[in-house]
Length: 217
Image 1 (cartoon, rainbow, N blue to C red):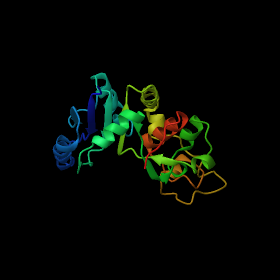
Image 2 (cartoon, rainbow, N blue to C red; image 1 turned 90 degrees about the vertical axis):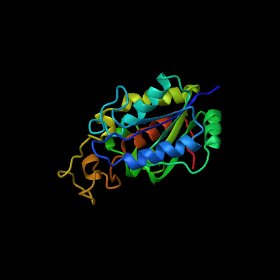
Image 3 (cartoon, helix red, strand yellow; image 1 turned 180 degrees about the vertical axis):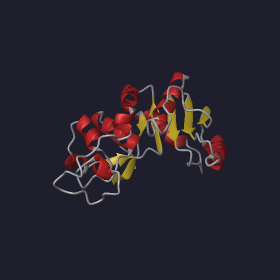
Image 4 (cartoon, rainbow, N blue to C red; image 1 turned 135 degrees about the vertical axis):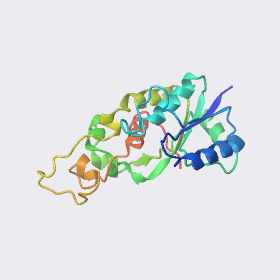
């Protein structure tokens, strides 16, 4: 029998997240069909750097914490999410397939640093043929070996070097000037197709792609 957990994080010194977290708690308590709902709102997940140190790394640590607490089927949902009907079909799919990874409309090649692609030996041309993964809603069944490896590898990349996109381009000395000098892409690549770096979503796609994990619409 799978034990199911839904987890999110909304740590802030302001009350910005309060209405979202209340809605999250109320709607997923009603429709989540989970054994446990965890909202990190005062402290970051155990072992997690803060968001400023590692952008969005807290998601990986939140899922790891649920696994360490004995839950097998784990759904991450951003704090802005809310439920409008029961999630039983989603849990059934997760426990059958081993994961839920959702395709974003954007291309990996537009939102990945040179450093992230080089880490996986992928060209930007190839990255332009892949969609980035949506970090808003995803899930893993930790009884599935591939999902365990996915989380293990994602944890190893949850560092400033990778998630923060700290690789700096050679501009302004490059022969070809970046057409979007005011964007993150200007800092992360000389390639004009790079418009920025989407942290966890980039590495979720790169790791999942290597492991042969299907994306869902």
